Image (cartoon, helix red, strand yellow):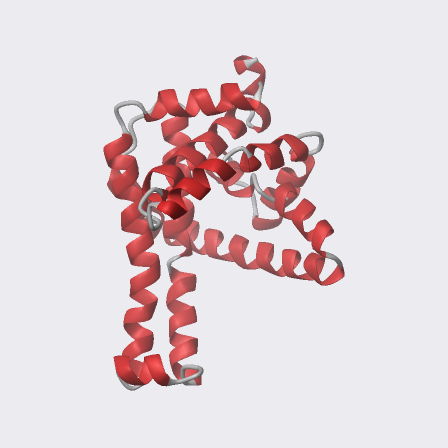
Length: 220
C-alpha cells in the first residue's frame, strides 16, 4: 500500500473520533510530563531551587526516573489505542490504563522497553545510521505484543526485526511525510501536535495492519 493510501486510511479512521483521540494525546502528555516532575520538584527543595540548580539531587533523579518507567505501559497502551482506531474499532479513552489492570502485561511492557533501549543504545554506540535502522527494525514490537501476548520480550523484538525486512524504507518515508505538518504544529506553539500526534499514531497503526500484521494478506 502506498504511503498516501496509508495516511488516507488513518484519516478515515479518525473521522468522528478526533475528540477522544486528542483527549488521549493530551492526557498522556500531561501525565507523562507532569507526574515525574511532581515528584522531582519537591525532592529538589521546591520550585525555585529546582529552577536555579544545575542538576537535581540524585534522589530526586532516581525517583523521577522510576516514575517514568512505571508510566511506560501508559505510553504503549496509547499506541494500542490508535491501532484499534486504525482497525475501525471504537476504543475508549480509559483503555490506555488497561495494562495497569494486568500486572504481568505491565511488567512485560516495561521489560520490553528496557531491553529495546539497551539494544538501541548499543547500536547507537557503533554509529548513528545503524542505530536509526535498528530502531525501525524494532518499531513493530509493541504492535506484535498486542496481537501476540504469548510472545516473550525477546520473541516480540526478534519478530519485529524479521517482519520489517523490506519495509524499513517505507516506514522511514512515512515518518518523513509528516515533516510539513510538524513545522505547522511548531508555528502553533505546539498546540497542533495534539492533532498531529493522533494522525501519526493512527497512520503507523495502519502501516502495521497493511504490511506487518498476520492479517496483511487479507487486506491486500
